[in-house]
Image (cartoon, rainbow, N blue to C red; front, side, top):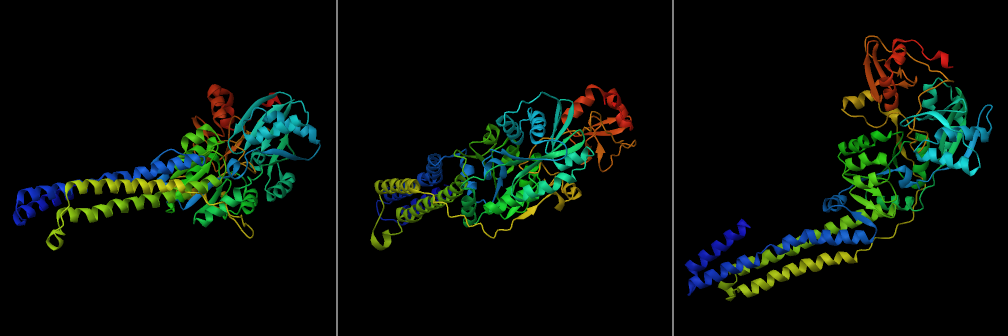
Length: 523
């Protein structure tokens, strides 16, 4: 605007000094014409009109865009991270098979495991409970339920100590799960979720849970690749299960065995590589990652927390909405650039004519009336161009051609904790979650009815792996949920529940911190 005022003043001065009579009148009219035709109405309308039409078009397609910034940023995305459960898959896991080991039959094993999972809020636990009830089994009441994020659950059912979760959970309780690992590996290779169970300190079997892939997931991922966007899958599954699902839908890069609380760190790691990252998720544990991404896209069928944390909500729950959102953002930005061109072109041509550059050669001057009409015409051209966005139609999803895709799987084994700490943040490749679908439970390691404890160093320096003094679960100090300083040294806890139990009765667990084994009388 200062430049326009300067041009108007210069126009007045030149016409007043060098113009024909009546010089003052002609100078004033020319200066006013410059100010009128340079009115920035079209420039002011160029961006908000396109954004308004774009967000309205998105709403009609089932895509709710929270802000103009999200719509504008989406066109820059070069990487889309997809959570597996509920995003690529339907998010409705179901119990499909039971593989008992040892002396336990299918119904007995399922009854005890389902009873232990009855208080769980995780979808895999719910799938086991539903599977038991579908078989008409009566579930006894569980006692002493506890959980550790990313590992499994523990409870006492009908006098039996039950552990349900990962091989690491069982190993932490001193249980050799080798007899179950072959079955688990076979199931993982088929894209299913193996859930390991132990009863009274002995491996008892594997429960098989499957979560079907959404019908359009592979096609949507293929469409994103055609748009030049790299697709990454993030999951708590083990590497084998994650690779099987990735091959099925055509994802080339997989971040596996990522604990829920580390998903946001993975997003930040990708951003540190210079990427513009979009995150698509549906669960409570996806909310931090959705907030950390450049653009968070929540599945509308997911949790309210995820939807609140996201910038864009896909009402239908289909991954095709991600393709539409990116395409619509790119179309909107093209339209904004066209609008800016029209607005600037009018000013670029109109201001010199209003100033009188054509008068010496052709005797043409621009009256304020014509300048006002030209200014209105520039605004109308921008409005008309913005409305062209209403004709935008997303292209149909292409056929998924996923044959031959070999996913690159990154897991905890490929990243050392020291590297993560040196970089100032965990890289998210730590403890494997449940053998699939990120079963975010855990269980302190009960063996039989008592506890097994490991002494904490008296000088306060924790070893590489130490024991939770409440439950005996092996805990790495760097990933412990909590810790307390005691006269015997620093003790670490696998969960907030164990820390609370210690705080409530510190004397009861003091012997554990000093290296003795309490609770023998309760065996």
